[in-house]
Image 1: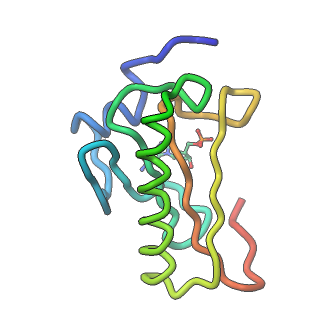
Image 2 (image 1 turned 45 degrees about the vertical axis):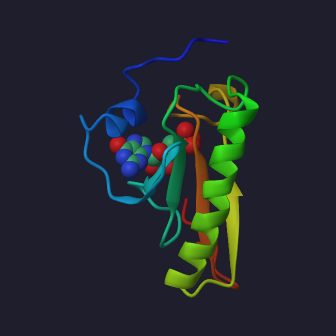
Amino acid sequence: MTRYDPDNIFAKILNGDLPSERVYEDDDTVAFMDIMPRADGHVLIIPRSRARNILDATPQQLAACMASVQKLSHAVMAAFEADGVTLQQFNEAAGGQEVFHLHFHVLPRHAGVSLRP
Ligand code: 5GP
């Protein structure tokens, strides 16, 4: 597995070199809107500390992310009056990962509405 790249896009968002629409932050995680949302209210949750993906993360990083994923799931469901929520998470290029800083997608869902491609 390739090592963590400190110049990845989400690292730049974390340190303020790139703008993002932050919707939540705590000591360990940050959440911001996905720039190409596949559903209204599509949010990304990332750890503040370095992890390339789930294969590289510590149990503590994963626990912090999942606590925020649950908070954001409740928040986007309420804000977008959604019927459900889909979580997505990709690891390495072959697993569909495009940005190599651990992140979780939270996608509010409405009954009968497909995700955008
Ligand atoms: P993944 O690595 O999970 O396959 O895809 C990366 C996700 O990050 C995509 O949903 C993409 O739209 C999002 N993304 C890529 N670049 C940016 C960016 O500069 N800002 C934000 N907010 N999201 C981004």
